[in-house]
Amino acid sequence: MVEILETVSRWAIPALLLTIPVYACFRGVPVYETFVEGAEEGFQTAVRIIPYLVGMFVAIGIFRASGAMALVSGMMQPLMSGLGVPAEVLPMAVMRPLSGSAALGLATELINHYGPDSFIGRLASTMQGSTDTTFFILTIYFGSVGVRQVRYALTVGLLADVTSLIASVYICNQLFR
Image 1 (cartoon, rainbow, N blue to C red):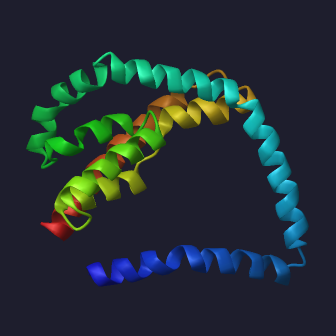
Image 2 (spheres, helix red, strand yellow):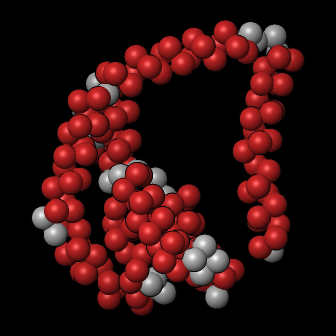
C-alpha cells in the first residue's frame, strides 16, 4: 500500500504539469501568452495583499512569542493523546490554520528530528498536506477582493481543518502503526 502511495505521489505533479498544457494546446488556448497574462495579474495581486500579509505575520509572531501557542497546545494535549496524536505534532496542528510556512517549519523540524519514515514524520507530512491555512486564506484572499463578512467561511474552514486533522490521524494510525 505504501509503495502505491509513493508511486502516485511521485508522478502526480509531473503528470499535472504535462497534462494541463497539452490539454490547453488541444483546445486551442495560447498556453504561453495565457501563462504570462496570469503571471502579470498574480504580480499585481501580490503587491495588493502585502499589507494583509504583514498584519498576519505580526499577529502570528505575537501569538508564538506570547506563549499562547504553547498554552493552547498544552490544553489540547489530553484530548489529542486520547485520539492517538503524539504530543510532538500538537504545535504544528495548532499553527497550521494560522500559517502554512510556520507549520511547514515545524513539520521540517519534526522530520529532521524523528525521520521522514517515522510515525511522527508521516503524520506531520499527512497533516501538512491535508489541512489548510484557514486564517491565511481568509486574510489574504478575502482581503484582496474586499470580502469582510467571513463568519461562515471561518466556521466551515475550521471545521474542515478539524476533520482533516482527525482523518490524518486515523489514516496514519491505520497505515503506519
